[in-house]
Image (cartoon, rainbow, N blue to C red; front, top):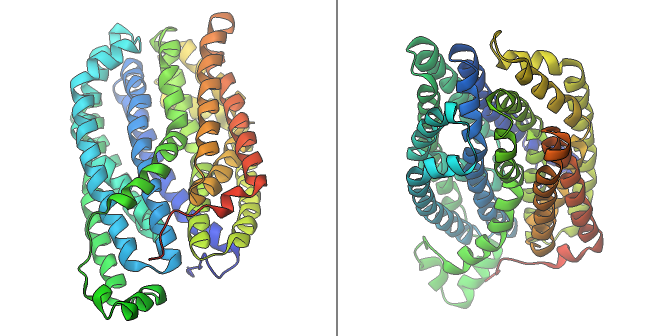
Length: 468
C-alpha cells in the first residue's frame, strides 16, 4: 500500500489510508475484548459475564486515559514532525514515555488497593462481587504494560506510521484468543484466566512496540537536521549540532498536559459515562447487567471507526498546522465528514438486521430472558445515532490537533453531564433504557459546541511548539 503524505497528498486519501490501519487495529483490540466476554459467557456462565461487565467500565477508563495521554503527546510530536524539528520531536517522545510510565505505576497501585471499595461503591451485585474483584486485581497488576502499549501506539501514529500498531494488535489479538481458549475453556481458570490472557498479550506487545520505536527513532537521528535547526547551528557556530539529545523537557511536558487532559476526557467520555451510570444498571440485577455488558461491548466496537477517524484528523491537523497549512485542515475535515457518515450508515444497517443474533452469541442458552431483552433493546436503539459520535470525534480532532483545548474540554464535560444526569433522573421513571437514551443526547450536544468553535476559525491560530 502506498504511503500518503499528510502534508502534500490529497487530504481525503491521506486521511483515509492513515485512518484505515488505526480502525483495523482498534477493531482487533475490541475484538479480543469481545472474545473475552463470549468465551467467559459460554464457558463459565451468565454471572461470570456480568462480573467482567462490572469491571469493564472501570478498566476501559484507565485504557482511555492512556490513549488520551498518548494523543496529548502525539499532538506535540506531530507538530514538531510537521515543522521538521526532529531532535525536539524525539525529546517530546522520551518525555511522554517517562512521564506516563510513572503515571501508570501510580494508577495501577491505587487500583489494586481500592478494587473492592470501587466495585462496592458501584453497587456491584453480591453474587458477582468476588469474581469482579479478582478480575480487577489481575488487571491492575498488568496496568503499566497495558498503559505503555497504548502510549506507544499513539507515538507511532504521530510519526505517520499507523501500520506498526495494526500488526502488533493483530498479533496480540490472536495471542489473547489462544490464551483465552487455553486458560478459560481448557484449564477452567474462569475470569482470572481471561484477565491474565489480556495482560500477557498486551504486555508482550508493549515490549515489542518499545523495541521497534527505539529502532525507528534512529532513522530520524541519521538524517540531516531540518532547515530551521541547521540555521540555528550556523548562528551559534555549531553548538546546536554538538548538543546531546535531551531526554526530558518540562516545557514540552506542560504543553502535552495542556492537550492530554482534555484528550483523556474526550477519549474516556464514553467509559466515564458508563462507569458513573454503572450503579444504575447494577441496581436492576445481574441478568440485566449481563445483557447490558453484551450491548456495551458491541457499542465499543461500533465507535471504533469514529474514534479512529477523529484521532487521524488530530494528527493530520497537528502536522499541517506545524507546517503552516491551515487550509489543508479544512479540506481534510470535509473529507472526514464524508468518511464517518459512510461508517454510520453501515453500522446502522448491520445492527438493525443482526442485533438479536449478536446478543445471543454472548449468552449461554439458559440465560435469563431479561439479559436477552436488555441487550436487544440497547442495540436496536443506539444503531441510529452513531453519526453523532462520528461528527463529534472529527470536530474534536481538529480542535485537539490545534491545541485549542478550552471549548473542546467544555464540550466533553457537557456530554458527560448530560449522560449522567439523564440516566440517574430518568431510570426511576422509565427503567434501564434511560442509560442508553442519554447517550445520543450527550454526543449531539458535544458535537454542536465543538462545531461552533470550528466555524469560528480561532483554532487555526493556536501554536504549541517553539521553532527554536
